[in-house]
Length: 185
Image (cartoon, rainbow, N blue to C red; front, side, top):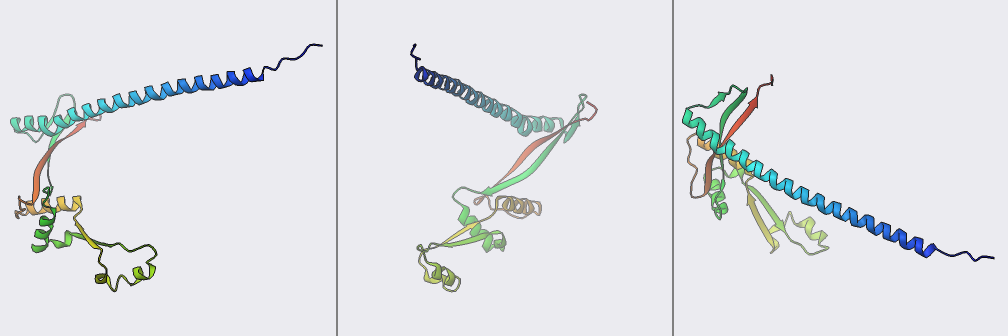
């Protein structure tokens, strides 16, 4: 009578080795994929920088030199230079700028947010807060103006010939180029 050999330990070890080999291949694939993404992101950033320089500087300057606002090329491409007034608060002048806005009857644009920190479980105190806000010591006020609202306000003031204090606000013209290709191509 022959005795049957038990190879199950070897089979389990082989399966473990196969799983580890598969994981090693997957790890390499993931590493390669991450490297490809990083290269593609770098290439995208470079391409965007080239596009932005052409659209915001090079073409608008060339159009100015030619005395044109728009042009149709023989290749069926239409270029149009755009201009938009942009702006915001100067660094470290946000509070002073909002004070100026309030003092000059533009305070309706300023959003006020008041927060109060209460201890955990202060449910009754929270309910009474609306009535007794001044009784709490840890009251904080935060003011802001939404970025798009501020830019619209700056554009409207400039268009109306009204002053926008340069010591408080950054105001600049952002130029760009609209590009269209004719549908025939």
